[in-house]
Length: 454
Image (cartoon, rainbow, N blue to C red; front, side, top):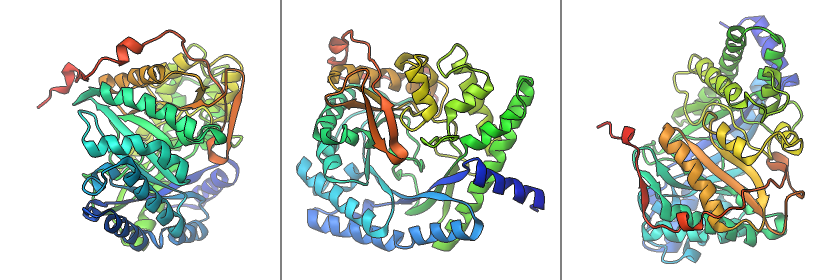
């Protein structure tokens, strides 16, 4: 039973502490849309999305109105398109046609973003995988709602360094193709290790092949709620701090569970998972960096930052798993730079560097996220950054990701501004020493010894 005090508390979270359901994401299986004819394949994809997702936005708005819970985004994730288009796509241009089809269908049903323009190449690339990856710069240029992701490694398989090298080149090319938008195309492209099949958050969302034909996944977010809660225990012991974060995460996750169940019932689609990640926005008071400061750091990046983030991540998970039997996705704390004003402030203050962010990714939910770097950063250097981050995920058996933006024509001291959820970011310096001879080796880095558990 929910009592009146809990209702009042939830209202306070929504009205004053930026609690929201960040996204309702409808996952769709498109494998049966494959066809040897490109036009037929695109037609099947469009029909599938319009039929399955036609009521998604309306349903989200109805739930938001009925319960008074803001639902910021309504999204779709689809089966990795490299699999769907393998039979009909003989060139990168063919894959771009599928991207345009997905983009138009997303607009027609009214969703904010569609994810799944993806390839899974942790061990090797098929011809279709490579064509899709090489099509990404043009696909991001010619669409505005499509998110792209490429898995290049996993704990069980190892790290495909041929794909890592290629992704460095693709990111540079994507930055060039969208240079008139401060290389915004790169903000819709993420490279992953150990990606979950049920992630509702973009840009890394795709509908995994282990999933049902359709499923509803919900992502909640409440950095402001957590910060407000721990303000009340300032100076208290770590035990009190941890209990406070855990109890707050429980309350936030219950809101997500309610929305997920209602959306599942109204759409007649199975409920998948609740992702309880603390995903910040550029809005004041909606910052993971501010939580770290409230825990006791002068700025994110100060000594103790990795420990504080580890504490936060663990308590969020512990509280969330008590609130829902189906916690999944990423679930923890995100540390995107451009999307978190507190992180931007820490960079501008000189407290937060790329190397410190990399250390923090050992314990956060994802990885190096929405980081703007100089436009003249070489493809080999970007591949080296990717390799480092993927190795962290592979060795630590966790999801890691890289979403960097080599802003065309920009240098350290400049900034980029994407507006809205994507925010603004200063250009961060990158280590200038070369790793070209390393990333130009062919083949893959083998899986770590602890992967052999059969």
